Image (cartoon, rainbow, N blue to C red):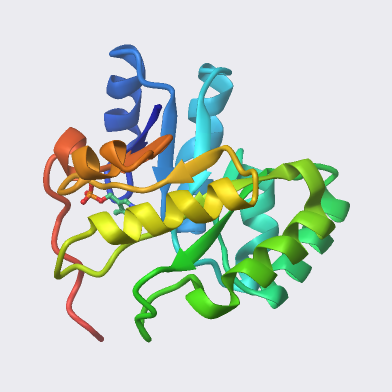
Length: 199
Ligand SMILES: *Cc1c(COP(=O)(O)O)cnc(C)c1O
């Protein structure tokens, strides 16, 4: 079980403090923020590992491939194309997790549940051993346990070792259901500032 400390919106100094306390794996949901914050930290701390955990636009795939050790949000064929192309150009391929929209929520990233098995198989064929697992964010309302159980079963069915699930509010439930990666932000770094009002 590994802890991904989600440092989005928090400054590089907060990450440096967490590194000093022994944490080495971090998660960011915006590629631009990660690209601004992490190269200097990485130069100073070679053991640091960065996971991109947010919905990823295809035009950000190249930056993501450049900065990330793990991309947890592979969720559609066009993004797979963009990552494959970027990996060829950059000469590096991060580890990849397929994000599954276990609640089939219209506003959420992730491959829809009915399409997940076929998409995972296609990604396996395309990326081979770089595809190591699955990730989900259950609906905000309701019991997350069935979503976590579904994701763990799906990963097992595909022989994938990484199961990324659980955040500050539900990581204990996720661990009980077989999480191998939990993504915890506010419980470590404190509340994030409110997002700016819409323009
Ligand atoms: C922000 C975020 C987290 C961490 O959320 P907390 O509730 O602050 O722990 C986890 N996963 C994803 C995908 C996130 O965007």
